[in-house]
Amino acid sequence: MRRSKFVILHITIILFGISILAFMLWEPHVEGRNAHATLYEIYFNDGFLAYVYIGSIPFFITIYHAFKVFGYAGQNRLVSHESIKALKIIKYCALVLFAFVIGGSIYILLGESDDRAGGVFMCALASLGAIIIATTAFIFEQFIFKFVIED
Image (cartoon, rainbow, N blue to C red; front, side, top):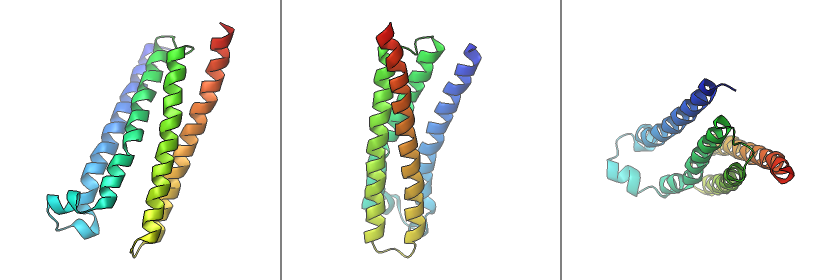
């Protein structure tokens, strides 16, 4: 592949990560129950928000390692031990993210909320995405591992 395609993939990953981070920082301010709250009330009186921020750490680690894998592919080093290690980290981070999403779904179900269905649906979508990422990373890891063993 040409180098410009990998540059576009890198830019896409960076923009995706920045947009998710910006959304995570912006959304609590416009949420219905926080519409007139102070910054202290938004960020320090909401345990669920702290849980979401801690649970997003594996997501951003996954973004970083996806960036590294595309870098290896751009350098024609995709079939290497470094890419296998990065794919393993992506797989494990996706599974940890899945566990955090399931925990958030349980918190929503057991909490006092008027709109549980929306939160649970969002958790189901995030769970599906995390499982797809973990499965894809596992398949690529096994595929690349076969080539590394043969070399």
